[in-house]
Image (cartoon, rainbow, N blue to C red; front, side, top):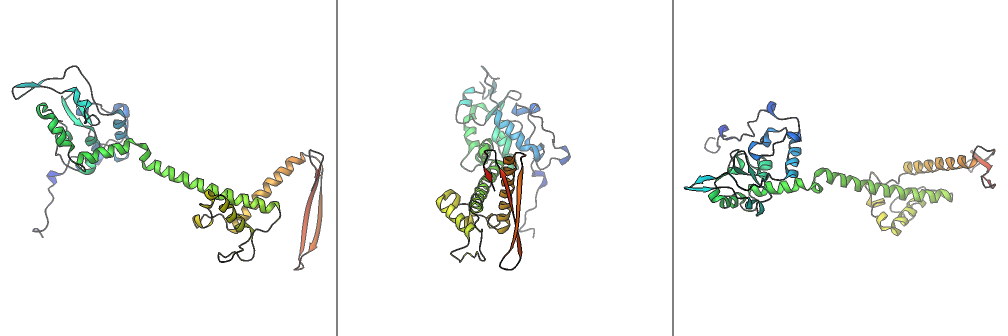
Length: 309
């Protein structure tokens, strides 16, 4: 087995994997977050529950780019060299950072996300020491950026995604939830409109059979389908186009809508009575099955002096 498997060398594991869970930073205080990249706490030391908030804070503030008239010179190859602030205005402006504390440059996006893709140290921009070989800075900047799908490129894209709140998971969920709410409201309003029409003219909601194979499925489903044909936006979310557990067309839903309409009608009548006198007429008769059916009629004079039954 040793011929086919390579033993894992724990000494080469990244510092982020060696972080003791008990030493994680659990409290988030945005005011205490260090702006200087040379003095920051590694992202791996933050509790996973607050990592994204820390990242959002640094992304919102942008890379630390302190522009000074002159930077500390360093002797390199018998010549004095120093950082150039013009580098902040070039193609590296969105991620290049300068640390006054260590007179070095860093990469913001790699600091924030490189542990998500790579657990190791392959570039000066990943380490705490930064990079300060000013005589070949531009060459190392280009090498650090690399090609498409390089570690830096992946980190940079993740930084752009997190900075764009329209792409966040929560926003997508909220948009999806709002879409479902709007469709549900359209289905409910369509069912209520059809029910009000049938109640107004005293028509039956359904017959003895409402199978899909029948042409005549009853007044309720028939008028609802007609309503969807006349209003395409409604037709897209009702009947066959609605979720099978949320069509709002079953007999129980129809009864609930009818009871709600009855309560609203009763409220309107009571409001029209205005505490005045009224009369109740009661009569009964046998139906075809010889069962007695009782009818109640409310008779009153409304506010306009009209007799209403």
